[in-house]
Amino acid sequence: MFNNLMHTSCLHIISCVADHSMTTSKTGSLLTTHVLNTADGVPGARMALSLHRLDPQMALWNLVSKGTTDEDGQCSDLISRDEFTAGMYKLRFETRQYWESLCQSSFYPYIEIVFTITDLDQTFHLPLLLSRYSYSTYKGI
Amino acid sequence: MYRFWKQFCTVKQMSIRLQHIKDHILAANQCAEMSSPPYSPLTTHVLNTGRGIPAASMVISLHLRNHTAASWTLLRTGATNDDGRCPGLITREAFVPGVYKMRFETGRYWEALGETCFYPYVEIVFTITDAAQKFHVPLLLSRFSYSTYRGS
Image 1 (cartoon, rainbow over the protein chains, first blue to last red):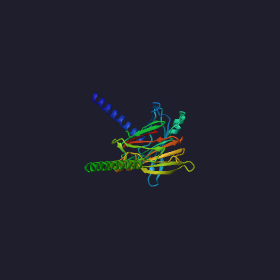
Image 2: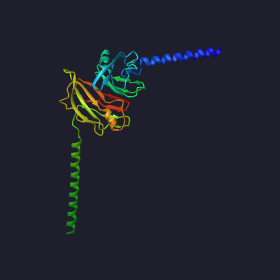
Image 3: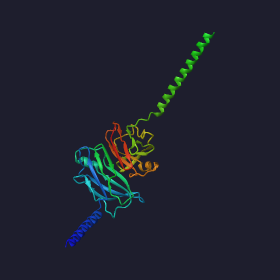
Image 4: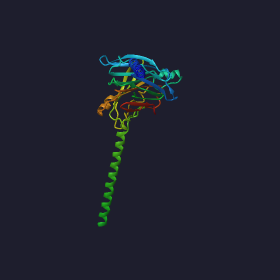
């Protein structure tokens, strides 16, 4: 009986893990961002942003997705596994709109971070640490 | 006679010495004239924070947005010097209020060092409202990160 219970428990655990894995790979989070307002020490919430992929043959940027950062300044699910191909991408942040909503001006009307994806097995976290007169970014995971 | 000859040699030596000093001063002035950069109200400085050195020989370009055509006008193309700077980006007369873009060819820079870079290029877009001020827009860059700020 004990062996049956253990067997059933193991199967249940394996099933839960499999479901989680399928869910994670299906929804993405392959590419995420996190905007931080370093001037005020708060998340950069409700900032509009968009992801674009370069069509090298046409030399044009194609819109992949649009989003808005949440109350924590984060935005995930920007691209699905199926859409995530090697190439050049651009994350555009509408910083002027963001600062205008806070009744402030900004030196940067928008910020575009252009990056190259070669290894599709990785996950990519591209944060933006931002003030009215400075910003920084880095490649995380 | 000997005393006269000795005085003559001393004067001649002093004359030669003075000429050497004069030549040295002239050369120093010429170097100063050659190294003094043309004035620009907009400057940049690129630093390779991965190696802790100036980012020399990086190609950069300055553009001004054309509001009517929603396109960019190329104002200047240059390359950073050994100190990571690019003097003479724009003249005071040409520096008008508007939206500018400074583009740094980061991919090519790292390729020249035999390395790859996550960022094929970096474009910093900024708004100038008071063109009477001086603006310093540096780029601190590694292969997987960069930062910039508005200085003066």
